[in-house]
Length: 570
Image (tube, rainbow, N blue to C red):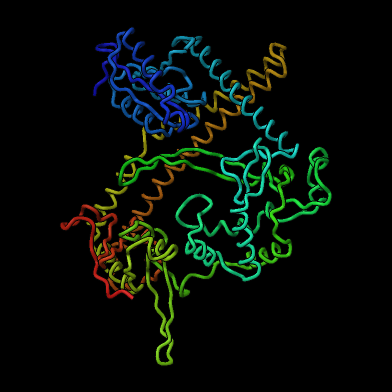
């Protein structure tokens, strides 16, 4: 669509956003935002091109379905302005607003909010920038006050109410302390007995719980094996004497305890998390997912809060912990390299990965060994979770797949066509011009450095106070962190594309056209490396069919997926 800005009808995109799923479900503010934007657009003579909503999306990231749609429409041309009710509907970070304004300006599109105070002049942009920083400062102060309030509450010996109480406990009426919840705590005591006294493994614990129909802590269908390990190692279930807890509590919190009782310990401020959102291009289209990066804080920052005694003997806790500490993950099945694991082979029924399995049988005094692939979900959670009973033997699946792939390697032209298509698809998935994006964020970093020097000069001349300088420098530091994060993400996307191009080059130069004897001599690890380069996906169906897709998709006369023949299942 050619641009008509300034020479034709004025076209506007209306954009509304709410930040939480609760707001999205209730419709709070979305309809109000769109209504206000419609009134403004009609009054200004704009033709509304599209109304776009981001329901339940945070403004801390630009990776949002609605914002992606806005950016695509702007890039196509013909958009005069993108309208939002408030500036923070576009983004919560001033750095993101700066970036969107620069990106849209490249397509002769304005970014406008109904609460803008300035105009397009440098002075107007400065005014809006100051307002953005003030709004951001207020949000940070609110977050800081909330954090400090929680720390103070924990030091007073009170629980910071979580979304879900720890298993075996419930919050009291005032939601600042735990009470033992006997129906669940009895399950916890049983876990400690089964582990500490009977030496049960996480897998056997899960099977017992599921067989008896005991509800899982999270309400899911299956018990998570990691829950048992975390349960055994948690201080909240371990009984501590008064002297032990007094050593880690504040005097204020310790003063209210009974010296004759025992207590569990719940730790606050032990872990921190950074959340984000990323978009990925899949075969089904663009997919958005939340990211969580957890980290453990220094131990001196942890705050201990006492909880009621779980009623589990300390000797049993120590015995259970000893069993868990000795529990080590066994070696790979059969001590062989499984070239079709690691995200290559999938179950055709439930879509989960196929896992490696090894079994031995004794027959007439001789030991027979079997290596085979099976559905990981069925293997882990039981026969009722997936209907795929087909379990191809390892060599009877690996050899036909390799025959298909080696045939592709012996046909360099077909391989080249598939690789070029794969690389081109990856290039198209990268939004915008990465080089210009890197340049824009680099310019933002330069601007931050320039402003830092200017603020320091103003403070030296007495034009601003030291507290004002600290506030301004703190705001600039946050902008710098955002810019560095975006530069890092852009670099990662570019490196991913370069790795794909390098893989394509390595396949064409090193493997394609190899003499058959050399190809047949490749070991399983080299085969696995080739499969990853080819983006190979092997789907094992319940009826014994095996379908293979990869870079040869769309380049063969038969079309994808390709089928291979395997032997009988074990």
